[in-house]
Image (cartoon, rainbow, N blue to C red; front, side, top):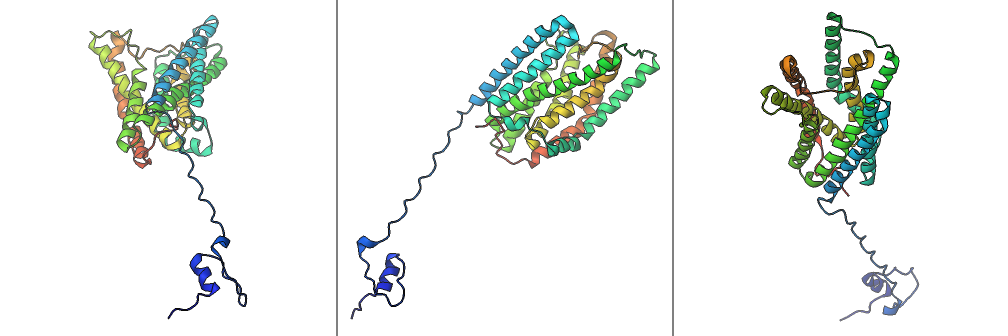
Length: 324
């Protein structure tokens, strides 16, 4: 025997508000409250086609080289050292333009946390550079070769600015652009992240050898070249890991600059020698250079360990700051 459905029961079944007690309301289907439309899912933002970012990176690196050549030509009339500084500044400007154009603004940010992390992780690098500075100074003093340049205050300031320019231009190119491009391609896994870091470090090392002047039939020159790649590559590996952790090239750039300053301050800043450096020597200097590179490689092992520790803690996938 069926029973009549009360308005309250009907409201519950039809998902409508329950009428107050004592009020008899008959709900009709046409009186149902309209349902709010389901909001449409936002359209997914399409990123760059895989590989396009890396291609654009190489394009902007080429632009940075053009800026470098242009800066060199501008400063050439003021002398070779001025030309080197202007070239380095030009490279820095070109790479900064590339980073910003590719959406990597965060790579150029700086704060106390970034600088603090760089100093905390890079203390060993500064210690090694400080030890090399001390050995260089002691050796020059023992041989009575130390002659203070007449314009040493200007040279000291110039050396500091030059080292800053090197730090920011090279970190912008190799850790801002190149590492970012490699991470965009292979940063989907931890293995891919390691590949990106190692590739950028390898290119960084290769760039420090004058291959046009290398005599391939001379085993001492070839040994120096490959040891220099290894030594500089280990440094690049550490800097790349630091960029992965801090998301900025500023910390590594400052470490890079201070390390170079410690190595250049005596000969270039105080004694006024030229900034032109040949990493592959000949004659009697060849064997001591090989020994120096081997020593630095051993001293840089802790940097590789520190860098690997940072990469192990990195969250993956990590496509880098240029991934859009």
